[in-house]
Length: 629
Image (cartoon, rainbow, N blue to C red; front, top):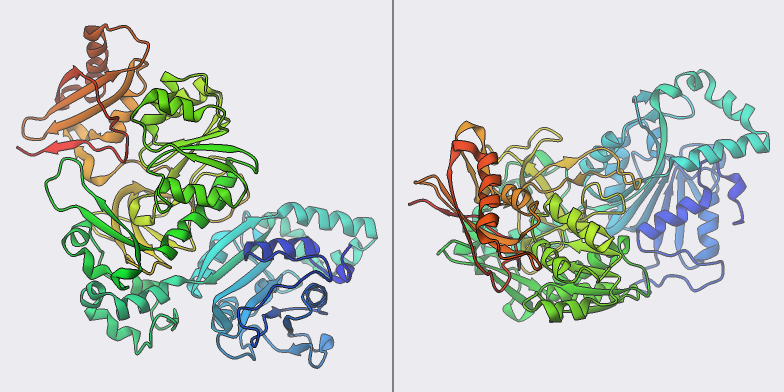
């Protein structure tokens, strides 16, 4: 056991400290192993432990990293050790701005007299890429504010909001309440329970009301403020668009300067005008913040059913490698080292979706074959043989499963389009696999959010993306848990940052904890798009995702296209039969028409035809073509 652990008066001991450092990408080695190197040998890696007590964690870290500069602060003068532990409070740290690489707050923030001020001080002292690592108790039921040993017991939401309000982006927040029960059990075993109960006093009688939990978390100074500084200096488009608000931000010397949240708050940020896809189409080059020679990839997106200008998005190599980082982490829910993956998405170029997946998966020793989008079912089936995981577009994976039911992957990841429940069930039944889904778009740098093993919402790239849920009519935040338009701000992008960009996707956030233990909000299943939905009489809505749910539920349908004439209120659907079904065209057309008529009633008229759809149209987000004339 690690030395000095018995001196700790908190759940989890050094094991939780080690886990928090892993959140920050730092593996704590065995004592005497090589330490993490500083990027600048003249500047030692600096860790500050706030509320350090007798310094147990500090001594443990110094054994593993003798070259680190480790200092501690505690308000109790009885633990004061000159040159090692200073006496002071978290609300007024005696350290210069932007000098710490890590700030530790283990069971100390809840006991601060002013926790918001303590977090703001941590933000001031941390370097721009530094980490705030926290562990503490929280209330799973009712918030309590106590004067004794425990301090305040607040909900995960209250704690998250306070962290964000201090200027941080929360990278991870995990429930580890099991360690609290283990710690109490250990106190009983060691004969210390009476002293603990005496310290709690009368508070222990009301702790049951709070439903005490325990969490660990990791956060960094949010890239939002640096992004605003960056586009003010570099982006011709945002220099012009935000002219009226730049004066509030004061003088900034460039992207290395961090705006303080108290000088430009979240409320101020939400007054910034929204960026539209039409603006991106009209002047894409004005969004650029780097010279053209630094652009690694330009992606041109043509909108189905539109004759307007396409969208063009520019990415640097660093921008795209952030996506590979996300794929490396997110895919670990579906694969393990030694597995084989086949990707049926754009590729195989290094900066393609397939190429970035191959890069990320290679880091965790997973072999990846990039087949590309499916145009030949026989070739696609051959490339999928022996694969443990298949990645592709929903309609193409649906067709592949119908054509090659014997492939048998363990997991399937569906991406790039809406995922109908019927498609997910068909894949799971046909291949006896677990189906995961991913949300993202080109504007997010491909990666956006992915399901964990609980498959109950998307865990987002919070370090790289800020997602707001806004009322599409008013542009104001919707009440928690309600659906609205997803609005995107990129946080670390260099080539073409986007600020408050309207994605057109409809979704909502899930505030409840995930079964995996994550306490951060997650994105619920995206329910279609604004630009391919039509409100009909009687309150009905026509959209591509509704058609997906209706038609993919029919066994004989493999794929379809749809267009709607708004003037005539007429829906035209072209369907392609699934492999292996007899050519009973009349019966199939009748079944499709019956399903549509049953759902929409007299809101519209329907015509259905059957034809081959080749190449498969599921190569990207599928659209309902809306004709006004």
